[in-house]
Amino acid sequence: MTGFPAERTADRSRRVRRAPHPMAMFFRGFLKHPVMVGSIIPSSRTLIDRMLAPVDWAATKVFVEYGPGVGTFTRPILDRLAPDATLITIDTNPEFCDYLKRSISDSRLHIVHGSAADIGTVLERLGFDHADYVISGLPFSTLPPGVGPAIAKATADALKPGGAFLVYQFHPKVRGIIAPYFDRVDHAFEWRNVPPAQLWWFRRDAVA
Image (cartoon, rainbow, N blue to C red):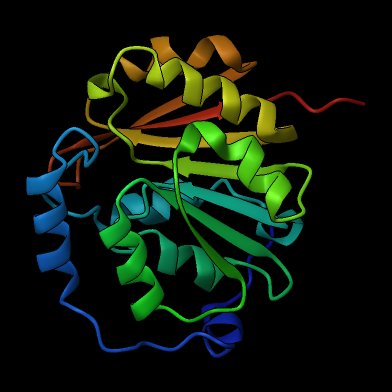
């Protein structure tokens, strides 16, 4: 797997604009929508690096992120993403969407206010047939009944053969929700995160 150095991509069209402090935004989002924001503290750099390590960045053209919040994963993904690739973020919280628009400017980034269950429609609207990878920190164990399976199925349908759904959670219940729609599952723990997190890579088999 080959990555693209941060200095090659971070210098592109991205720049930081004036915006509220990310921790303040994240905490406010948690207070307003605790069911949709999985933790009161953003993910650690260790968790981010480990979660993204299996990605084949050289072969990635379309990457989708559910619930980007204040961009804790968004920025590292952009740092690794190829110059001609696309990152699509989908969030139901309009404040987070507005924050990302104000704090990150990158021609590869498309910020969508909407539901992860509509990933197929989002991809089609932006002119893409599928995604190579999808990442999510949405708290599947606390989502309203039926929403988790709907997101899992929509994600599996939207991924290319050989693609993967990357999920970081604090509750093991997520496996039973997502695994039925995928061919293989890899699992790990990251104890150096607060709180300790479970890491899941749900994979679709490649078709010859």
